[in-house]
Amino acid sequence: MAVPEGHFQLYTRIPPDLEAGEWRIRADHELEDDDGSVGSVERSNVHITINSPRYALPPGQVLSTFPPANSIGSYGSRLPQVVLKRRTLPWERLVDDDRPDTPWMALVLIAEGEAELRTGVP
Image (tube, rainbow, N blue to C red; front, side, top):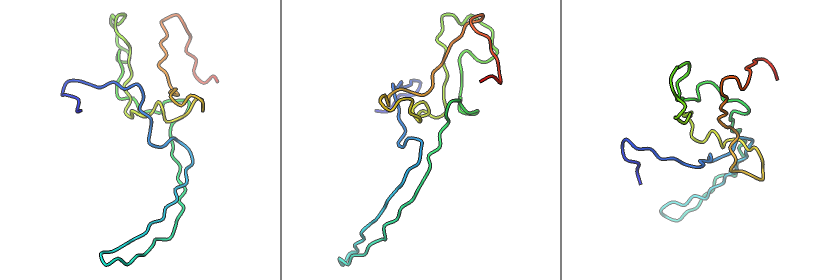
């Protein structure tokens, strides 16, 4: 069912078709034409790598945020949010092989005075 204009659909999980990592694709095919003669295509192996970010969100993957960056306002009664450009991004890496439904990223909220921001520190 299509989502009506002006509405949106929330999903609990959208896994990618292929997880990040090394993959091998093996293909062979049998061919038959209209008169019944058969031919075949030689089996081939192709190695591919599916890349995905890990440990940090790459620039350009955030479509929008609320509240907006550097804004001032009374946002205490509103739920903060981040809209990603790729809906599968949180599930493209496994955190724990035994729990594949666990996303590798989370939105962490820190109120003023609760933490100190330090850059360049492991």
